[in-house]
Length: 137
Image (cartoon, rainbow, N blue to C red; front, side, top):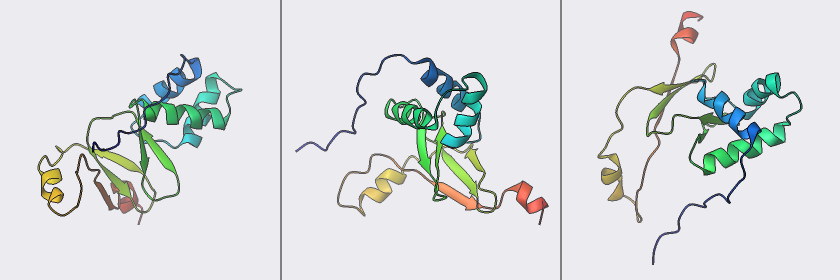
């Protein structure tokens, strides 16, 4: 029996709003929330709703154009850098940073012997205190 495939998005028509949302996420390294993206989109498209932003971010994630991330802070964050990489999250201010270290190529294989299934990928998040928060102690 073949493993189930991730749900593929239905074919969606082109959308100026989705293009603008993608450009905003792609233009920042801050791993924004939908609310932050909404505020940015409203600068050029004042009538866009928060629901529209959420729906389009979801479509972009299904298309593989952005990553949807949950760091346990109650909000989803979005990242247009979709290559495999790790993150650092500040436990004080919640800032998220991409880490410029190569992914551990053998980690999937090492974990495979401990699970009763197939490991296809992994996400690794480091948690600590960012340099800005350290300076303001």
